[in-house]
Length: 325
Image (cartoon, rainbow, N blue to C red):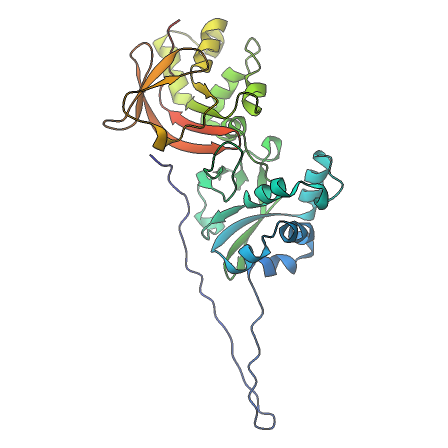
């Protein structure tokens, strides 16, 4: 199973104006102004740090001749905020490999204008340390265009859209977009809000700290939706998340996590027994669509796959999995 791309490739019509004038019987054909993504950025003073970063990471040629691309371009102010927050004096202080991945995390294959953006996941050109699978980006169009949950979650907001280039389009963003962890992905998607509430409940372990780090990574997270949690509360005859006993909630949340493995959809097989962070196992079935049978014989459908983070991958399930308790 693959998550659906939200992009459509739209051909870019390029018109070249050729004219001539008579001067000693010679005909002149002025060259059109270069207008690649790199060219557009280099002519905008507010992208000077971005251009310096692209030069240092050897990505100018990619954005000059490749594509089409959609580029979410951070302003100088966005870069200054990024540098200050990470203790860098200037762009030359950022480790080169990290800088390249951060820049590629702002680039999506295909050209998409703002009118074509819809809420959902897309793939960037960046890779984290967990997998060769490229990182996912969550775009929310409910109020403007917010990427990966906005600035508070390592994401950004589009401030100016649809700057046209010959090989794609640029959307200006107010922050440098960080490489999202599995926790960032959970926070960014409003349909995981109850999952986030569960992970951060006061009587629980520091799930956010663990799942944001690398000590037990990479992680594979099977993330229940809000509807899945609502149905669980009904199934258990509980009025709200606060009524779930501490040990039950802790074990249930751990049962949705696999440590030390970035398990993609292509890695799942019929009858696969999966060992979880909680210590119990569940079984993957593929016949009739990918699904999971938990320790209590309850079946959950895997409804979206391969939401890639820098330290692991998220698959979406429509029923909360319950371990043997």
